[in-house]
Amino acid sequence: MFNHLKLKIKLIALLIPLLLGLLVYSIVLLGDRWHQQHDAALVVERMYLLKEASSLVHELQKERGMTSGFLASKGLKFGDALKVQREKSESQLSQYMNYLEQHKTKCQPQMLSDEILPQHKAG
Image (tube, helix red, strand yellow):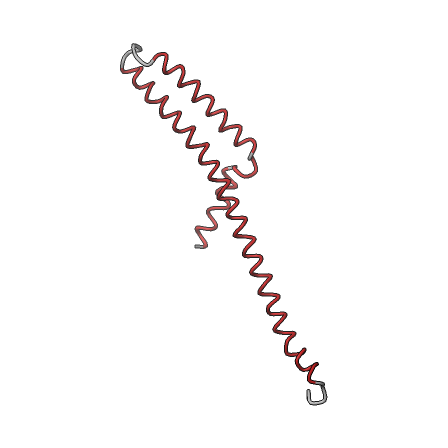
C-alpha cells in the first residue's frame, strides 16, 4: 500500500502522529502547571487573610483578658489599660474589615468553601 511513496513521505507520515501526541501532552502539562500556579496564588492570598485574622484574634484575646481582670478587681485594676486595648482592638478590626473589602472577591466565605470542599471530596 505504501510501497509507491518516497522514504521522506513515509518518515513524515510516521512522525506526524508522534508530534501530535507530543503537542497534546504539552497542552495538558501546561494546563496542569497553570492550575498549580493559580492554586499557589490562592494559598498566598489566604496566608495574608489568616495573618490579618490572627492579628485581630490576638488583640481581642488581650482585651478579653484585661476585661476579665477589670471585672475580677471590681474596676480597680486595668481601667486605663483596657481603654487603650479597646482602641487597639477596634483599630485591628477596622484593618481586618478594610482587608476584606479590598479583597472582596477572593475572601468571601462562600467562595472559600466552594473552592475547598470539592477538593476534599475528590481527594
